[in-house]
Length: 155
Image 1 (cartoon, rainbow, N blue to C red):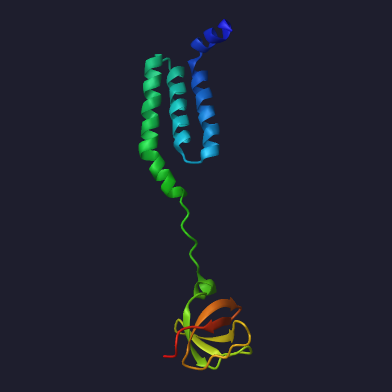
Image 2 (image 1 turned 90 degrees about the vertical axis):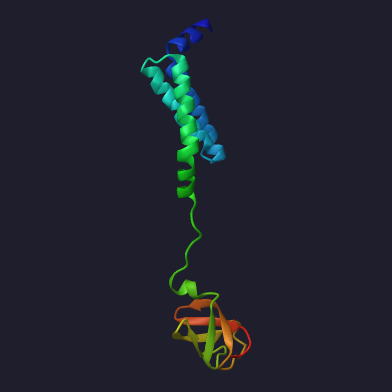
């Protein structure tokens, strides 16, 4: 066992890399980027060891890099990892919107004005009849037809 400690004393870089590896493994379970930043600090300690710097310098470099990474790099990285809620475009963006009935809407058809365009429409349940002048809400887009259900009171 004494031989291991002697070897480790001569090869401090391996202890730093082992620590970086452990931090990397812990990061995979937390996914919060803290341990990844600590792993970068430990890796910098390994580089300092390979360059022949004394142990206290290696430690100070590892701590400094870790603090820098956690304080400055981590917030930027977390901001880039946040995925914005999906932006709906095209016909999918019309779901949930209000429209005005232009021609009677029932289970067979009708016409509505939706975002300045005239769309064919059917009642969502296939049984409801909605007269012209009433508001409807779009429940679904089926090809070029809006499936709607009654909205607010007539205009």
